[in-house]
Image 1 (cartoon, rainbow, N blue to C red):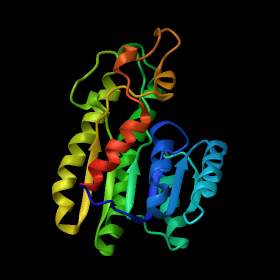
Image 2: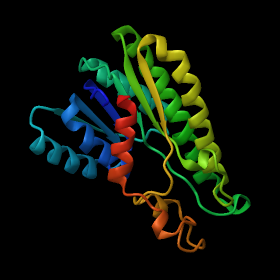
Image 3: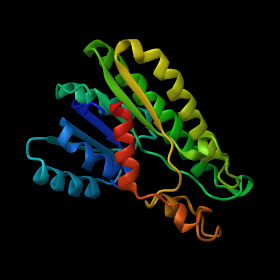
Length: 231
């Protein structure tokens, strides 16, 4: 049986919907302070209210910001420090993709994918891991994808960013284990979230090329991810 780990402060990016929302729900009773980060403030506030009602012993903070911007990431960590918060669990869940041929893609969307999937994840980890080392331990959960080991045509940039996430996580896991910090790359296949609708282009058909029976419920993916982090 795995030991259920609790946390002083858990920070979840991309927490307004999908896997991020479900991660917040399943981690709320296992952390003293839960920090929710995403762009859509109204969805974050709604989630925070539900969590406070369900888990009154857990403090919930909301930060609405665009993590593709380096100054916003720094501002987030500065605001946490001002509140006396030093996360001992970082969940890098925020991400995006663009489904369609690479040659016809809009560069602005590809650039945003690179910034959120690679740059923001790496930067936040770099900003917060030193505090975990000083605090004697912690955990980093990076949401990757099955696409990281199974490149998908028409999803080339997304798959490449997730290959980075998986490789980075595996190397960091070895670097940080002697500091008592666990690092996990979560590599689900297709999941029932709004991701496919966001990634889809107007001319790209029904979205990601996966049959309905391949999709996993987000509740199952998150439960298994947290269980793996507990091992």
